[in-house]
Amino acid sequence: METVEGSQADVSFDGKRCIHARRCVMGQPHVFRANVEGEWIDADGASAEEILHVALNCPSGAITVRRKDGGADEKAPRANIVILRENGPLAVNAEMIVDGHGAMFRATLCRCGLSRNKPFCDNSHIEGGFSATGEPASKESTLAIIDLTGPVTVSPQPNGPLLVTGRLEIDSGTGRNVARVEKTWLCRCGHSQNKPYCDGSHKAVGFVAP
Image (cartoon, rainbow, N blue to C red; front, top):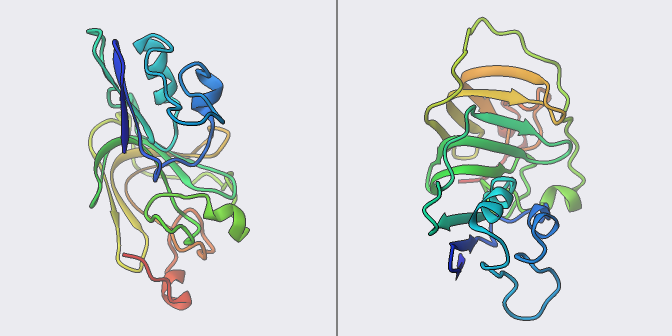
């Protein structure tokens, strides 16, 4: 984790979490300067509010901001959401705790089984040719969940799926509601025939992950 201090805000960057979505360099190129030698973050290149806006659009949570101008820091989202990226990771925006990694609001979680930085995505799905739809059929639910706020816990099961507990919505890559759940097991071995859900395939393929 590297932190650059500015007059209005401190900007932190966790390179291990970054999936190079480029929301930062495209959103505030004067703050996040691509292809430069040495220091690439200028924490005074924009206002604290503008930098925070870019951070909130960083899907992996690699960028975080601590404001020093009296403004509000990042808050829990108004709804906990998991977005299914086509042939890619689970993009989570929630008031969550990832076991072993602490509290966070944003994360991209591996679902191809190939990441060397599990449970987080490291873009190994691209080289590995992972295939998984971001548009699965919507799942009927008897749960009448209206309030999608509150704590969510993501618990990677040894050699198994992600156990997710807490109120949240699973959305397709285009934003369509797929399911609303309070507890679910999401595939992270990459072999389930019922993605994004676990179907026990991790056992058959000998998936190994902490």
